[in-house]
Image 1 (spheres, helix red, strand yellow):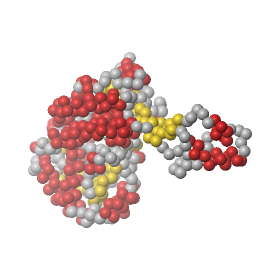
Image 2 (cartoon, rainbow, N blue to C red; image 1 turned 45 degrees about the horizontal axis):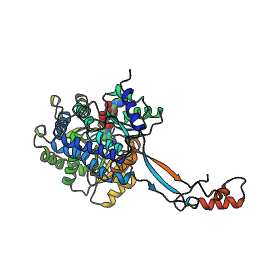
Image 3 (cartoon, helix red, strand yellow; image 1 turned 30 degrees about the vertical axis):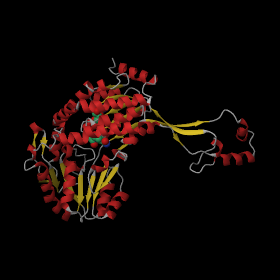
Image 4 (cartoon, protein in one colour; image 1 turned 45 degrees about the vertical axis):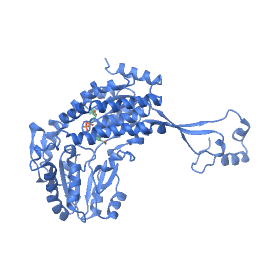
Amino acid sequence: MDPFEDTLRRLREAFGAGRTRPAEFRAAQLQGLGRFLRDNKQRLQDALAEDLGKSVFESEVSEIAISQSEVDSTLRNLRAWMKDESVSKNLATQLDSAFIRKEPFGLVLIIAPWNYPLNLTLVPLVGAIAAGNCVVLKPSEVSKNIEKVLAEVLPRYLDQSCFAVVLGGPPETAQLLEHKFDYIFFTGSPHVGKIVMAAAAKHLTPVTLELGGKNPCYVDDNCDPQTVANRVAFFRYFNAGQTCVAPDYVLCSREMQERLLPALQSAITRFYGDNPQNSPSLGRIINQKHFKRLQGLLGCGRVAIGGQSDESARYIAPTVLVDVQETEPVMQEEIFGPILPLLTVSSLDEAIAFINRREKPLALYAFSNSDQVVRRVLAQTSSGGFCGNDGFMHMTLASLPFGGVGASGMGRYHGKFSFDTFSHHRACLLRSPGMEKVNDIRYPPHSPRDLRLLLLAMEQHSCNCVLL
Ligand code: NAD
């Protein structure tokens, strides 16, 4: 017995009947999503605190308010984004109507991870609804409390004939992936990303893969160490380091390392006090499995700051490691916890070479008082996103696409990029049924004059059209 069959059939029928296509319907669902966030704010905050020890500040900034803002800005722009987009024409189509229609794919599957379990479920959902799709949402089974709220409460705010929340871990998700979807949007690890892509390939289903990796952070000698330390520590230890775009390791000179260490210690004490375990601002590791994994990484290099842990509280202190070898596990896997290795390089060239011999990261950070240095790192590397002189502030702009490149993923979303991701861009040309005489030049038998005229008629300023 397939537990998903009935649900998927119901959603497909609703899509086939055109329920999700009208702008009014899409707007009503987005408003429902907004109400879900407002009505259940306390419950969501509690669930995030139970799952990840998130403070109200972190829950608001990175989960609830950010999802609400995506809903609101999408509602403001929905009708404009849905409009057909006129395109330029050639001589042969001057009297015709040529445009791109943004049409929904159909039945979309969204699979979410546990680290921002609300944001990374709802923000893609906003785009999928706005684009007129039916959606199956598969939240992470690891963030159990948010999963429960999404399963029990969210459906009351949405049209259940078009949107469904399904539950399960790897075996259930594998079974779900056997079904044919029209689009799959996956956020998670590169390992599972490959499983999802292989399953999608069986049905030729297009995918967006929002994956992870190790995000380098280059620090130039001319920087003010305290400013860098504040910014790096804030973004490294936010959500206890369990952030796909967190600075994963620092590359700097030995001299800068010596100046950064006291500055990082001072930032950590300022943010979390003398004993960070008592700080309400520091999150907790999601579960024992990840706690054990992170505890293992504390053995790499030498602990310069922090290093304490408490298994019963799933607590790992904000930690800085030095003297780390590139071959050690902490430099071989995405850290995804409150541990920051500092690696020394002797020049900017060496830092760039270090970055470029690894997989392309989701984000890359460069700190320098010299604009030239920041721009050189930008020009000579590749990554999903880039921020000069700060952590993942670039993500706060819905006007920028968010996504990876190479091993950190494919595709993009946020704001209009989400709408476009969940829309098929259909090429449309509406011609007149009359004026058949002008088509004579394209029908055989062909003469050199016909060919000349036809090539002229097909010529276009902005496009090299291929004949017929
Ligand atoms: P994960 O890949 O283990 O799980 C993600 C989702 O896939 C979950 O819903 C899970 O149930 C499902 N899943 C797990 N194993 C599966 C399997 N074998 N077959 C089918 N489905 C399976 O990722 P995670 O541990 O939840 O999240 C951490 C990872 O996600 C990190 O690598 C992180 O960098 C990445 N991430 C990326 C982004 C981004 O926007 N690029 C955001 C957050 C997290």
